[in-house]
Length: 185
Image (tube, rainbow, N blue to C red; front, top):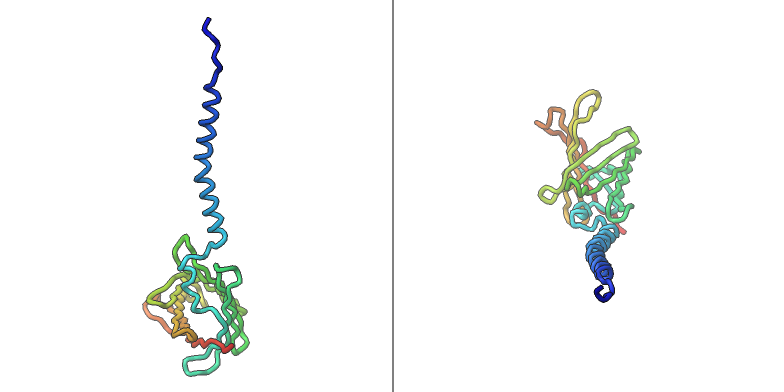
């Protein structure tokens, strides 16, 4: 009978398993750290800042200088969402939520107002202007396409032009042209 030697394969195996476990957990820990950083600033990418020129308190006129209303654009949900608070000179009011959708690489706006209007618009930057388009909706029984362009003019002025088409986009007419001028502090 051979001399009895201590059986060590189990100890060696458990050491190897511990090392493998630590190596396997390292990427998971890294992913959790990256995930925590992304969760802390989920909208920090530059694309989320493309519409920032619209932030602020604005007096809005028509191109010929007649008062049209006021608009206040805020960021109520961290760095992820712009919210619009429109007050028209004639007493109308409306609000929109605007967000950059990472999954599509496009901006989205949902607009609602006290007249029952619902606009669902998508788009993005085109030549320095934010251009959002809406699919077909029915207005007084007729199909209509919407296109709204925001054009920054320096740091304290933005032009917003809302165009509509009733012929599938062959021709467009201006429904609203607002000249935004930043309110003085």
